[in-house]
Length: 97
Image (cartoon, rainbow, N blue to C red; front, side):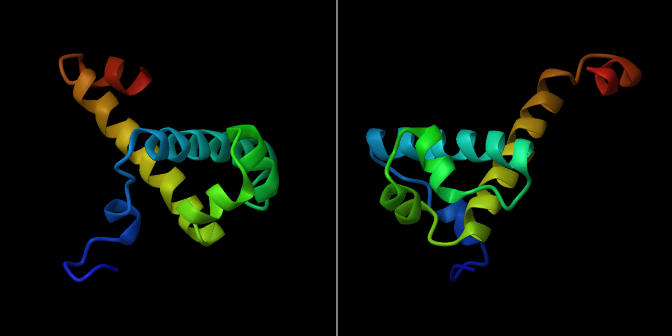
């Protein structure tokens, strides 16, 4: 946790454009790999799917847990965006969508 009580995964977002692209590619590749092989998917495979080196993966995510958390946070953020986009639909239609 950071000093203000925010989990590090929120505070660690890269700033440079290339670092942001690598971060996003790693999270997308991890989501795909974890979906196919579970949370024990190879980190080397995730780096390869993201088209980055294993060092880049570890620079962004020093532990497997941090990568898992980043994927989870990305999923929750996507769910929140969907909720906002579906807010005008009747409840059942929004739920189904």
